[in-house]
Image (cartoon, rainbow, N blue to C red; front, side):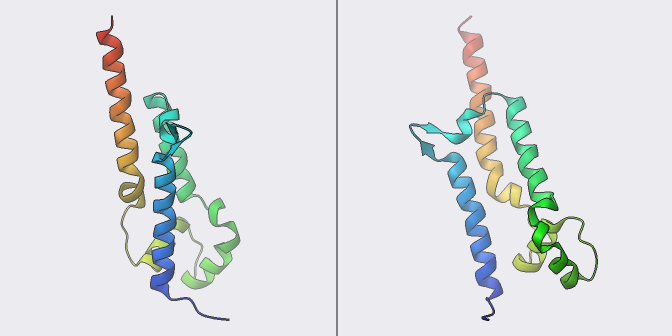
Length: 120
């Protein structure tokens, strides 16, 4: 068994999350995935679902016992603890990776609303 370098794991984890963001804002069949979100309520719901998933124990279900052995106690917010352990950082990954894409979509939704009002 080969031990993986912690920096390599951290880099790969961040790369994967950034790739998720790229997929969210990539053009697929002439349309951007995030543009499927039509209004602010749907955008808030999508943000909540992503954040809840990142904070959920279910995401790391198969690793919770391992995390418990590493930290010596039950893990309440597994992703935060893994981020601290692997990335040695407490940055908010939502802000770093997804916030800009969602902010840009919100701006487009607001602009579309103003355009609709201007047509009246």
